[in-house]
Image 1 (cartoon, rainbow, N blue to C red):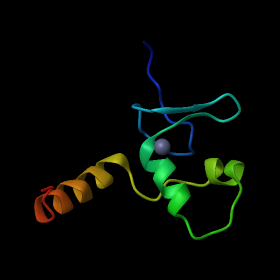
Image 2 (spheres, rainbow, N blue to C red):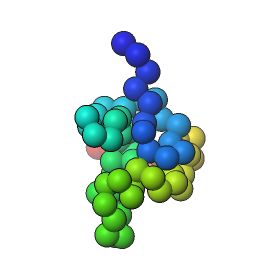
Image 3 (cartoon, rainbow, N blue to C red):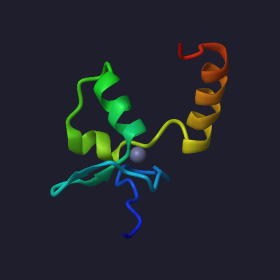
Image 4 (cartoon, helix red, strand yellow):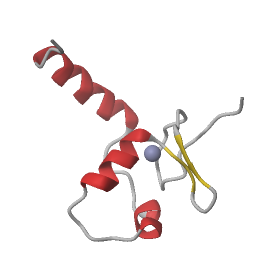
Length: 72
Ligand SMILES: [Zn+2]
């Protein structure tokens, strides 16, 4: 199994669950960012747009919220 690095511009994620034959791999955080985005952009525009948060920053936010809002 090779590395499945995200094809989004500037994304460092190498654990991608999603793949498009047209756009390549996409990680879950980019996927969520796109579907939750309020701006009306095409997939190719999104793939070329720069990632606003690094995977480390997303992980830090996840830890912060995960500690505050417990799964029950
Ligand atoms: Zn990504």
